[in-house]
Length: 160
Image 1 (cartoon, rainbow, N blue to C red):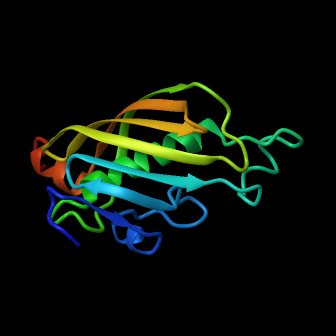
Image 2: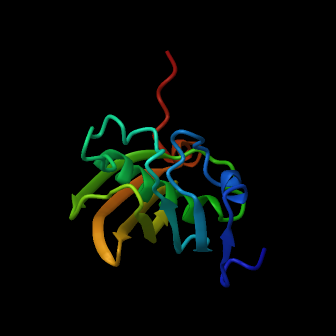
């Protein structure tokens, strides 16, 4: 790996060191380029074999919006968990504002680009955009947290 400033890529095996989700809920196949604490870009290849296509929807399969958002959040997570000392940390969603622009279909390459807008006290404010066939499929403003860090900054409960 190279330094933080230069960035690096992660294959499907290496990615699992920085993203705690696993099959069937890992929504990223490859990270093309991550600059820790700044941005992460990669993709998910969608085949008709994805577990959700038979039910969403029979005869007209498309990727559920919640899973599109999950893919964006997972890529933003990689931008944070690649920072020094963050490897393997679990993240939780705090708030997401998402806009869906087009259907995401079997055979599409779901290209994901995320940017960290701020990272303070265990809370990451970020933005993500996903594309298929060169067109915006969805975009989201996201707040995610690493609870282990956030808890250090929360007021302590009085002892009874």
